[in-house]
Image (tube, rainbow, N blue to C red; front, side, top):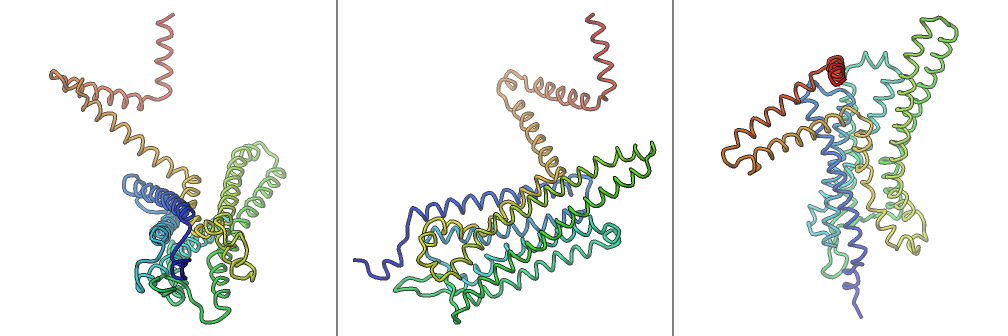
Length: 384
């Protein structure tokens, strides 16, 4: 029969294996997605013509920084913790890790909120938005950093390196008041999830309503002024409004829906386990599904970079163009390094062939559509 210390120092190794797998997947997706964003912004600024970040890209950069912080200081420490089972960092590291773990989540939520407010001002109040400088956007982002830092301070006092049994130490939370755990979990849920969600839903809903209202006004205006010139303007303007409306609605639905889907499992499980007196005896709470769901607090940081990369055509084109350039350069190098081309002094020939291919490709891309059609016409006449 095992004593108390032995029972506390054991775990379900099969469940621990799946916890590690989930965390590894989350970490890889988070880091790769945000590295794509960083690299695309770098290429756009230093290898393109756009030397200055626009407001939208400024928000996107800080959102990616927040999500990257989540991967490094939240997912990675939790992964190490699950591998070693017990926290191995000591008292000081316990408080540092617990301070940094929610920092990325707070920062990501509030930068996302600041982005929604900025988009709301740009679309619903375009005239006042144009008069404001970029300083306002920077103030909102820097305020998100300060607010995230302040909201993480209670973690230092809640968590400590404690002795849970003979020879067993771990980084655990402790509350001196009986309602302390409920109050803290509820406050965390409101500050990191509910408040940002309300702002996101309100701003994107107002954007959609404003676009719909402007579309209806435009249609009525064109109906009253039923002239040929106005009809021509209507034909040119209506698809643009429709595309903007559809794109905004899609982005609103995607952002809000995924924010709920990725954040609610962790928040819901924590609230249930804290407020339900019978939760400790529930098979679900004591089962593997609940354990896996509690690891999903950083899932929002996994999907954020992919959402904005999907809706941003410019960054996708930059990344794809750079990828094609790398592939073409590798093909050129493979030609030069091929022994069949380098044997018997044929390296000069291979270099000439590569140069010919490059020149042909350059000439081909410089041809206009009119010149190509003329060449095709001449070839057809010769064949006939």
